Image (cartoon, rainbow, N blue to C red; front, side, top):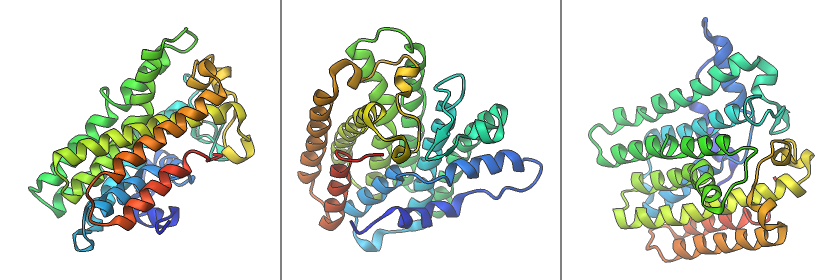
Length: 297
């Protein structure tokens, strides 16, 4: 692939607030979580979708950069809150102590809130670069919707409510579609919006991203059962510990592997059928999707 994690981090790290002033403790916790590493999957997918659907002269880092940083901030805020004692109660994330372990539960709650709010403040920087640009307006609306109560937060809420209870397939699909897929859909759709794609193409991108999100979450289920904690960077068997039903615990490992491949193939098929300007970026995006099948972390 022509784009890697370091390329993405050079862009998104520009938007980390400096830990100084009376609020420096919460800013330090925000920075700690945001800079802890990870796959940077969401901003990478955003950038690849943008590159795929626009020519090189359309690229403006001062417009897409804030959105790339914002989506990673929103994702990181959700991880901080997921790890809290009231939710998953995990002590390890990306091989490091979770935020509440290092800074205390009170600061961790505020750090999660801080990153979520700062994400929108960061994305709004694009308005000053392209005032009145419909593409930026549509991208911002998608960012807000996909991360809110009708997006990621909605999935998280049902996940919390159903912990320890028997769950049906519709409820499990809802959790996966919203808790995990929504931000992946957001990432790819925002990239397409900023590239100037029309509504038909954006709808296809959303469908492909939804399949990617489902594959990604079920692969996470598999890794929680069979993964190596040292490689994953977080505790395994946390779903079992928290009495959560997952696709893998309901359908088994082999059926889950088939599902991951089926969803990945579906996403690739949709993306291959879209008319694009940059075929190299399309190949990179498909390679990234394929890598999700065999990932070990």
